[in-house]
Image (cartoon, rainbow, N blue to C red; front, side, top):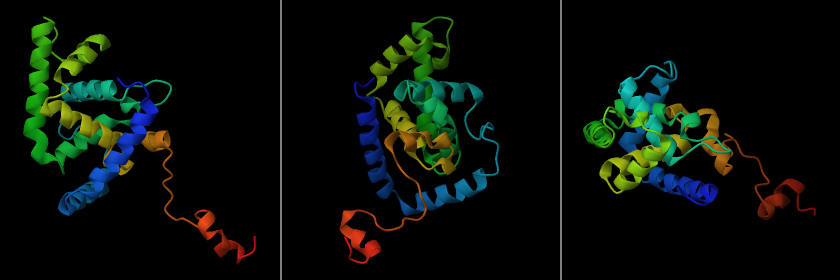
Length: 193
Protein backbone atom coordinates (compact mmCIF):
# COMPACT_ATOMS: atom_id res chain seq x y z
CA UNK A 1 0.00 0.00 0.00
CA UNK A 2 2.98 2.31 0.47
CA UNK A 3 5.86 2.99 -1.88
CA UNK A 4 8.67 2.94 0.67
CA UNK A 5 7.58 0.33 3.17
CA UNK A 6 10.69 0.43 5.36
CA UNK A 7 10.52 4.21 5.81
CA UNK A 8 6.82 3.99 6.55
CA UNK A 9 7.34 1.22 9.12
CA UNK A 10 10.18 3.12 10.78
CA UNK A 11 7.96 6.20 11.04
CA UNK A 12 5.13 4.05 12.37
CA UNK A 13 7.44 2.61 15.01
CA UNK A 14 8.20 6.13 16.21
CA UNK A 15 4.50 6.93 16.29
CA UNK A 16 3.84 3.77 18.28
CA UNK A 17 6.44 4.81 20.84
CA UNK A 18 4.72 8.17 21.23
CA UNK A 19 1.32 6.49 21.67
CA UNK A 20 2.78 4.11 24.25
CA UNK A 21 4.23 7.01 26.27
CA UNK A 22 0.84 8.72 26.30
CA UNK A 23 -0.97 5.57 27.44
CA UNK A 24 -3.15 5.46 30.55
CA UNK A 25 -1.03 3.98 33.39
CA UNK A 26 -3.91 1.76 34.53
CA UNK A 27 -4.21 0.28 31.03
CA UNK A 28 -0.46 -0.32 31.00
CA UNK A 29 -0.66 -2.13 34.36
CA UNK A 30 -3.54 -4.25 33.03
CA UNK A 31 -1.46 -5.12 29.97
CA UNK A 32 1.48 -6.11 32.16
CA UNK A 33 -0.74 -8.34 34.33
CA UNK A 34 -2.10 -9.93 31.19
CA UNK A 35 1.38 -10.54 29.80
CA UNK A 36 2.29 -12.48 32.92
CA UNK A 37 -0.74 -14.75 32.65
CA UNK A 38 -0.46 -15.11 28.87
CA UNK A 39 3.04 -16.54 29.03
CA UNK A 40 1.68 -19.93 30.11
CA UNK A 41 -1.13 -20.13 27.53
CA UNK A 42 -1.04 -21.74 24.12
CA UNK A 43 -0.74 -19.05 21.40
CA UNK A 44 -3.38 -20.85 19.31
CA UNK A 45 -6.15 -20.80 21.92
CA UNK A 46 -8.50 -17.92 21.06
CA UNK A 47 -9.50 -15.87 24.06
CA UNK A 48 -12.02 -13.52 22.47
CA UNK A 49 -12.09 -13.93 18.69
CA UNK A 50 -13.87 -16.81 17.02
CA UNK A 51 -11.78 -18.76 14.51
CA UNK A 52 -13.68 -17.02 11.66
CA UNK A 53 -13.06 -13.57 13.15
CA UNK A 54 -9.41 -14.45 13.70
CA UNK A 55 -9.07 -15.39 10.01
CA UNK A 56 -10.60 -12.03 9.03
CA UNK A 57 -8.35 -10.09 11.41
CA UNK A 58 -5.28 -11.89 10.08
CA UNK A 59 -6.31 -11.16 6.48
CA UNK A 60 -6.89 -7.46 7.23
CA UNK A 61 -3.61 -7.13 9.14
CA UNK A 62 -1.81 -8.89 6.28
CA UNK A 63 -3.13 -6.26 3.88
CA UNK A 64 -1.94 -3.46 6.19
CA UNK A 65 1.56 -4.92 6.68
CA UNK A 66 2.00 -7.45 3.89
CA UNK A 67 4.68 -10.06 3.62
CA UNK A 68 7.35 -9.37 1.02
CA UNK A 69 11.08 -9.91 1.39
CA UNK A 70 10.56 -9.23 5.10
CA UNK A 71 8.00 -10.69 7.54
CA UNK A 72 4.56 -9.14 7.58
CA UNK A 73 1.69 -9.04 10.07
CA UNK A 74 0.93 -12.74 9.59
CA UNK A 75 4.45 -13.87 10.48
CA UNK A 76 4.54 -11.47 13.43
CA UNK A 77 1.33 -12.99 14.85
CA UNK A 78 -0.61 -9.72 14.95
CA UNK A 79 -3.88 -11.68 15.19
CA UNK A 80 -2.77 -13.10 18.56
CA UNK A 81 -2.05 -9.61 19.84
CA UNK A 82 -5.50 -8.47 18.67
CA UNK A 83 -7.18 -11.42 20.36
CA UNK A 84 -5.34 -10.96 23.65
CA UNK A 85 -5.90 -7.22 23.73
CA UNK A 86 -9.65 -7.57 23.08
CA UNK A 87 -9.86 -10.28 25.74
CA UNK A 88 -8.17 -8.14 28.38
CA UNK A 89 -6.93 -4.55 28.44
CA UNK A 90 -8.88 -3.42 25.33
CA UNK A 91 -12.16 -5.01 26.40
CA UNK A 92 -13.89 -1.62 26.04
CA UNK A 93 -13.20 -1.83 22.28
CA UNK A 94 -14.92 -5.18 21.82
CA UNK A 95 -18.33 -3.86 20.76
CA UNK A 96 -17.09 -1.29 18.20
CA UNK A 97 -14.50 -3.74 16.90
CA UNK A 98 -16.95 -6.63 16.50
CA UNK A 99 -19.59 -4.35 15.03
CA UNK A 100 -17.09 -2.94 12.52
CA UNK A 101 -15.93 -6.43 11.52
CA UNK A 102 -19.56 -7.53 11.07
CA UNK A 103 -20.24 -4.46 8.90
CA UNK A 104 -17.21 -5.27 6.77
CA UNK A 105 -18.41 -8.85 6.29
CA UNK A 106 -21.88 -7.60 5.34
CA UNK A 107 -20.22 -5.56 2.59
CA UNK A 108 -18.37 -8.69 1.49
CA UNK A 109 -21.65 -10.63 1.25
CA UNK A 110 -23.32 -7.84 -0.77
CA UNK A 111 -20.42 -7.56 -3.22
CA UNK A 112 -19.58 -11.23 -3.62
CA UNK A 113 -22.67 -13.44 -3.37
CA UNK A 114 -21.79 -16.73 -1.75
CA UNK A 115 -18.86 -15.22 0.15
CA UNK A 116 -19.56 -14.14 3.70
CA UNK A 117 -16.11 -13.54 5.19
CA UNK A 118 -13.39 -11.03 4.35
CA UNK A 119 -10.72 -13.73 4.64
CA UNK A 120 -12.38 -15.69 1.79
CA UNK A 121 -11.96 -12.85 -0.72
CA UNK A 122 -9.05 -12.89 -3.17
CA UNK A 123 -6.23 -10.53 -2.15
CA UNK A 124 -7.06 -7.94 -4.84
CA UNK A 125 -10.67 -7.67 -3.68
CA UNK A 126 -9.50 -7.42 -0.06
CA UNK A 127 -7.25 -4.50 -0.95
CA UNK A 128 -9.98 -2.71 -2.91
CA UNK A 129 -12.50 -3.07 -0.09
CA UNK A 130 -10.03 -1.84 2.54
CA UNK A 131 -9.28 1.23 0.43
CA UNK A 132 -12.99 2.02 0.47
CA UNK A 133 -13.30 1.69 4.26
CA UNK A 134 -9.94 3.13 5.31
CA UNK A 135 -11.56 6.26 6.80
CA UNK A 136 -13.95 4.29 9.03
CA UNK A 137 -13.43 3.99 12.80
CA UNK A 138 -13.16 0.21 12.44
CA UNK A 139 -10.31 0.41 9.95
CA UNK A 140 -8.53 3.02 12.07
CA UNK A 141 -8.84 0.69 15.07
CA UNK A 142 -7.65 -2.27 13.02
CA UNK A 143 -4.68 -0.33 11.67
CA UNK A 144 -3.64 0.81 15.15
CA UNK A 145 -3.99 -2.73 16.49
CA UNK A 146 -1.91 -4.06 13.60
CA UNK A 147 0.96 -1.66 14.26
CA UNK A 148 0.78 -2.25 18.00
CA UNK A 149 0.89 -6.01 17.44
CA UNK A 150 3.69 -5.74 14.90
CA UNK A 151 5.96 -3.43 16.92
CA UNK A 152 4.88 -4.12 20.51
CA UNK A 153 6.54 -6.24 23.13
CA UNK A 154 6.25 -9.92 22.14
CA UNK A 155 4.91 -10.68 25.63
CA UNK A 156 1.57 -9.21 24.49
CA UNK A 157 1.02 -11.82 21.81
CA UNK A 158 2.35 -10.15 18.65
CA UNK A 159 5.77 -9.30 17.23
CA UNK A 160 6.57 -13.01 17.02
CA UNK A 161 10.31 -13.66 16.88
CA UNK A 162 10.71 -9.87 17.26
CA UNK A 163 10.00 -9.46 13.55
CA UNK A 164 8.87 -5.84 13.89
CA UNK A 165 11.83 -4.90 16.04
CA UNK A 166 14.30 -6.49 13.64
CA UNK A 167 12.69 -4.63 10.74
CA UNK A 168 13.33 -1.22 12.31
CA UNK A 169 16.69 -2.20 13.85
CA UNK A 170 15.53 -2.04 17.48
CA UNK A 171 18.02 -3.63 19.87
CA UNK A 172 16.13 -4.92 22.90
CA UNK A 173 19.06 -5.38 25.26
CA UNK A 174 18.19 -5.14 28.93
CA UNK A 175 21.50 -3.55 29.92
CA UNK A 176 23.58 -0.98 28.12
CA UNK A 177 27.30 -0.57 28.69
CA UNK A 178 29.38 2.52 27.97
CA UNK A 179 30.56 3.90 25.71
CA UNK A 180 27.18 4.84 24.32
CA UNK A 181 28.73 7.10 21.70
CA UNK A 182 31.63 9.41 20.99
CA UNK A 183 30.48 11.81 23.69
CA UNK A 184 31.34 9.38 26.52
CA UNK A 185 34.15 7.31 25.01
CA UNK A 186 36.61 8.94 27.44
CA UNK A 187 34.83 7.22 30.34
CA UNK A 188 35.99 3.86 29.04
CA UNK A 189 39.44 4.98 27.87
CA UNK A 190 40.17 7.10 30.98
CA UNK A 191 40.59 10.22 28.87
CA UNK A 192 43.16 8.60 26.56
CA UNK A 193 42.52 8.94 22.85
